Amino acid sequence: MPYHFEFVSNPVPTARMGDITWAKCDMVVTISLERLDRFKIKSYGKREYVEGHISREDLASIRECVAIALGLTENIADEKKPVDS
Image (cartoon, rainbow, N blue to C red; front, side, top):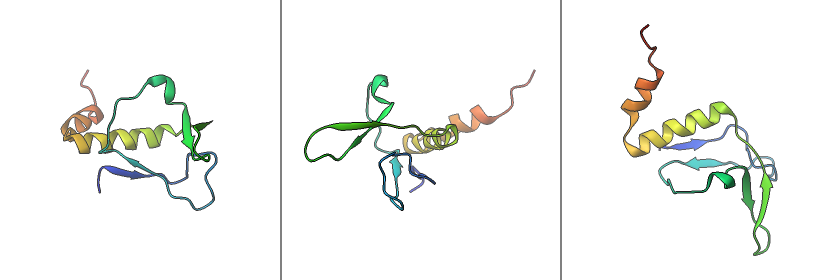
């Protein structure tokens, strides 16, 4: 779907080689900014987190996918237009 983003390289530090990771941008939820610096991993029923990051390019692509999911693609196109001086 146009509102799903497949990462080229897996951003999860504990991922196995070949694991595919998606950002499902049509499933927007409210989260705390303090929790955006870690990934939850499977750990036998308890919460375990590892640090990780994504590139600026991936974040830009995810923002575009969220805009598509929310019907805001005109706003994204406007942001990319050069500003007249």
